[in-house]
Image (cartoon, rainbow, N blue to C red; front, side):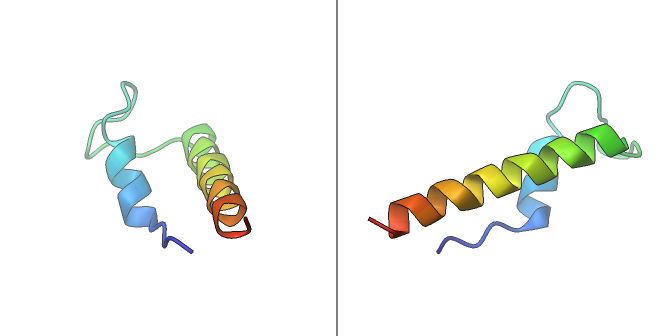
Amino acid sequence: MFPISDTFLLRMGNSHPNTGSNQIVSDDYLDSIDRLKRLMLRMAEIEVGR
């Protein structure tokens, strides 16, 4: 399975319009990162499971 690191997702998150690189990230935004991570893991499982 593909490793998906929090660092990678947070780096992706830095391009989000509402978050500067030094700005504290909101709970809603962390929740959306968590949902994205779970979606990506699920897609990876489907790919591997074929």
